Image (tube, rainbow, N blue to C red; front, side):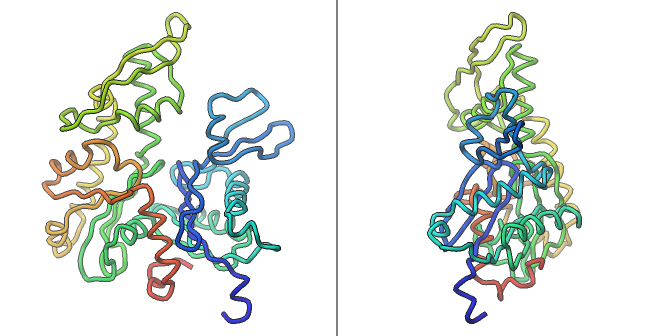
Length: 342
């Protein structure tokens, strides 16, 4: 600490399969899709985040859109590094600085990650001027972001449904007692919708359209109290090759997603069956907390609640619960030292 402290900036990063969020000075300064567009001829990155997302599925052969993270892990090392560094450069308060400050970072990682994958995240961070890099497990960050006091000798169950992985963890005394990481989450839901549209309606839709369907009328069960309106979807007819439009309802999407949600339910049940009895008693009283973008699927809380016979709560602003938790750990590094992986 001391003299060089003013040259160091602190940032918290939630490096997600679908979205990357960065907190700096207690504010979310970057909230962008984790996607980059690369020029094939020169190999240069031409756009990241929202701009690259607009290009997805609409590119010609010289431009390729890449999602550098797969299943919550870095799949394309080079692209992910460029993406992180471009996001950091776009932070408004860091832009004004004359020289690049050294960074103290806390980054989220899935709990089922291997040593090699962990090192990849770390090296990426060090290459973008990260002097001190700490890692934190996603369910842990989600719990802190929801406002659970994780240091108490009390069991809490967190289910974090992201883009690439669903992380389920039982947390007590500032540690993960038992956890399960399944590779079924937002991306799989999107693919389920694409597959359903092809098989049931002979309509070929792209990833962006499927994502839109999921957000607008996605549901986990067919009996919703406030069902969304029907939605018209445009795509290509697989039989005639002509563009066409069909009307679909949330009931169809609930059918399309049913198998994937069943697998998430099974993973939750399996984690509950491995929980020590004392902690299971706590969870009976506190219930299950849902975080991550996937938890916004209509009726998912109700469905999990029926399956487990436990109360299920969705975090307020579930998309940002993880990054908020990461930001809190960054501010109180001493307090959460035991939680962080150096």
